[in-house]
Image 1 (spheres, rainbow, N blue to C red):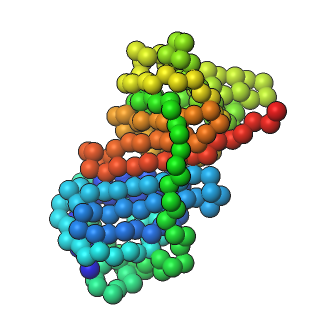
Image 2: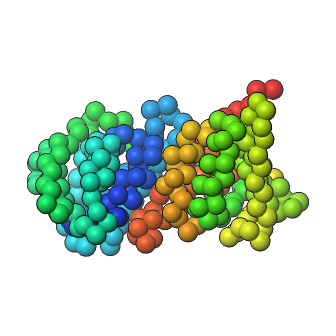
Length: 247
């Protein structure tokens, strides 16, 4: 059994974080809150999300695992006003989530968790470089890069202690360099990796509202983004595989 009340803004935030990468997922519920970890269909990116029970106005739960159609929940969240409170009820042994707000009441059929890919094990990675950057600055650089290319390079130059984001298309090139004074923090280890703009555009939108995003990198290694949402009661991680350049 799961019964909770949450404000519409927080509900929308957690759905946005997940739906940036996947359309369905397994949600784990216990008395501490909810969590999920999932990979996209192409095995290029992973999302991990946890939302503590303190993010809810009211929360009561028994340990369970349910399957959610995230795309459907995102469409429902789009009907909400920020001032709405959302009531969630999952009766014991039920296959439907009762969801109500304002004058609306939805009965949403859950997915069978056995039909959804199991939670992936997070890979063990040695990512020695670290940058902490405002979410809006990261999102802005990704949007700028998308104008000229379908890929973007993340570079750390230890000599200038700067974080560089650059993209090169067939005819155009763009660079954004943020020096130590422009960053919240930097561990300046030399590295460079290339990533798909298509993935970064979606997760960049989500991270744009974060006051800070912690980025871990290595050369030709995945990039790891860590950030908080819902007034730091929610925690999220994205892991994105690199695009390897041909020699």
